[in-house]
Image (cartoon, rainbow, N blue to C red; front, side, top):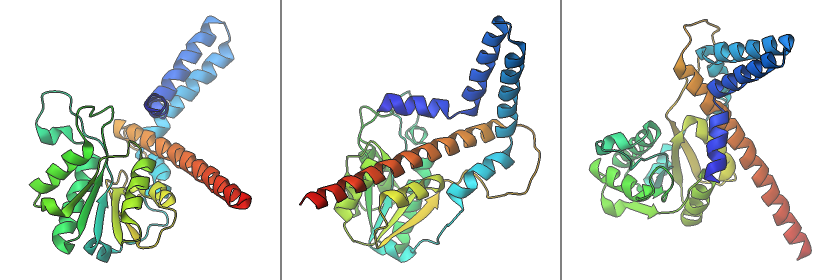
Length: 261
């Protein structure tokens, strides 16, 4: 599963897509197919130009980060605060703070701030994966929260969940119907809303926004940041489609099971 995810993440990159078309153009050139070669090169250049512009990546990200956005029910933080796991690396000789990805720091910092304001319990999930094979994400997240002033007894750990769907399944089984404020990256919220299956007493607190929601047409100097933003948007759309398909399959299986009873 990790290998498949790695391949998908790689192929979502406009740089990789453009590179593949450049290689295709080169092969067409060897085969003396001039028109196909020029079309391949043209597509490669177009992909690089379009997705290196923040305007086009903002268009991609807007439905994920801003469309149908609902203000969070902050009162739910008096019960449970749930920052989803992101990334932590145990590789290299670097300071502890440098081991955390930006998404992890924003989610956990937001959780600590809401904790100090509303005094709810904090739930953290996540076990070991390829980026931290020797440590549990949940344990490291709990240690960071304690360093931010959260009392250890107010942190609940579930050391499971190598995927978003796995995390949500484990967390919802623990939380049941208790009011919960879920914290995650803005691009992630639409998928999490699908995975929690419209449960009551759940609200969402988005952080780690990639775009500013600016849909004004503009032309800027090509940016590597825009290319990375496009990659993240493509990946999230693919993940959303996969989770939607899996949910439909599960619903159909449940209905079939009920019909046979």
